[in-house]
Structure formats: C-alpha cells, structure tokens
Image (cartoon, rainbow, N blue to C red; front, side):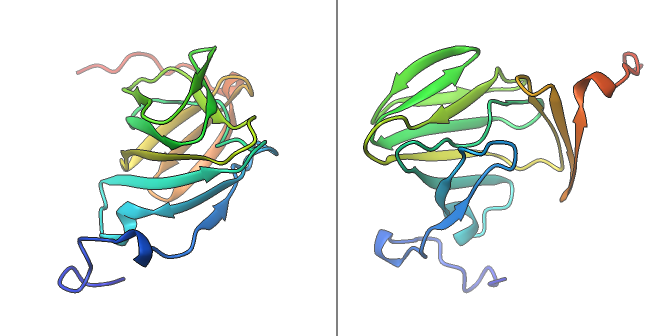
Amino acid sequence: MTSDATRPQLIRRDDRPEEKVGAHPLNASSEMHYVSLGDLVGLERIGVHVIRLPPGKESCVYHAHAAEEEWLYIVAGRGIAEIDGREHEVGPGDFMGFPTPSVGHHLRNPFDHDLVYLVGGERRDMEVGTFPELGKKVIRVGREAWLVDADDLEPFGPRED
C-alpha cells in the first residue's frame, strides 16, 4: 500500500489503471468492468467506482442493504434500473440514492452500447445484504461473509437498551 505522503489525491483520466473485470457470484449475467477510484486515492470509509456494463450484462443481483448507503450516477449510455420492484429506464445525468434500510435495486444493460456509471457507498465493518428474489442474505463482518438462506434465520427478539 502506498503511504499517505506519496499517494496521489488527483487521478487524471489518462493515468487511471486498466479496468478490472468482476461478476457477482449469484448472477450468471453479471459482468462489470471497473476502476476503484476511491482506492486509488486512499479512501477507506467510502468506496467510489466507475463501472462499465457491456451490452446484455448486469451489475450484480437485485439486492438491498441494511447498513451501508449506496448511490449511482449514470455517466453514459442507457440502462434499466429495477428499484423496489419497478423498472425505470435511466440515462446520462440520472442519479439514484439508497439510504438504509434500502429498497431492493439492480442495474442492467439490455441496449446496444456500454452503460457507464459512478457508484459509491459506505464501507462499514458490518453489513447485511438481502437478495429478496433468491431468498438469501449475506452477512459480512470485516472481510468475512456468510451467505445464508433467509428462511433459516430465527428472530432473536428486539434489543433491550
């Protein structure tokens, strides 16, 4: 890791590293080409990424967050955002924000050109994500995560303060 004294605070477009390619393990149509801009300048509490979805590809899987807020800003192209069970065509300049607990959301590109967007969000020590269409939850503590069937979770009761 680069020390704070030598880490750049400005990343010029022409100086960005090549895109990485990732996919969500629960969606065979997921294919995201991305650069983690926040990592390049040393941001630790928030993530900021520029993502490119090729035609016919999807971001991840329809999901909701319990603890981490997330936002998306469309830079170029068109896509379909599924938000709280409804589909919306989105394009350049459109912004989506998901305060917690969030409604379900997902982004896909059924069009002929790349969809490019910025996405950012919190990086908390713990998060619970819900995949409502799959009946699953992911529980993350630090860098460890567990995928569980939502039906297998037992209510533990309200917390007493």
